[in-house]
Image: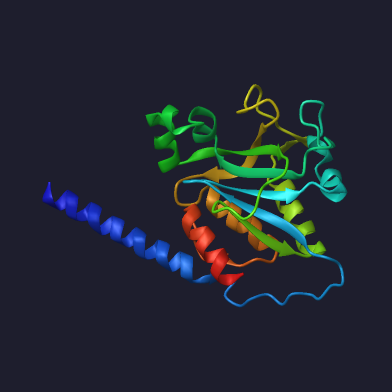
Length: 223
């Protein structure tokens, strides 16, 4: 019993050390050189929850064109009140079977701690008020926003060129779930995907950010 407790404490201590290092060691190590541009920057948002992060990109004409494959009467990219496309990546079981803490079940937790298929969750948002603790804004250029759009678009699974929606899956009337590339686990999950997406846009993150808190801290320090 004592050996088991000692092993558990050692494992937790090691994870804390790794998480601290992952937060304060930047990735990339050397800050990329920003190209000067006379064009006004675009704003993207990091939306943070207790265990999950999403990215919101401005729903301008270029974004609507890049994600035209999502446009549908039930997911109207051209809605006049839609200002942001909100995207998150995560484990299928956790996303679909435990939408709230009250609905948390053992099986989604087990899959999150081992390995699970991944999904993308997409939603439309109107005005998002700033500043607020769970919203972090960044200014990026045209090329960086193009790369971010491409990173997200490339994360969708496609069958014969067509995205793969998950039928009857969603939290509200508009949001949708789709099959995504990659596999999910607790060490390399939703927040590490978000970090990779931000890096594609020229932002720096920590070396390893498994938690929203560490990701928000690292992007605040290095950007």
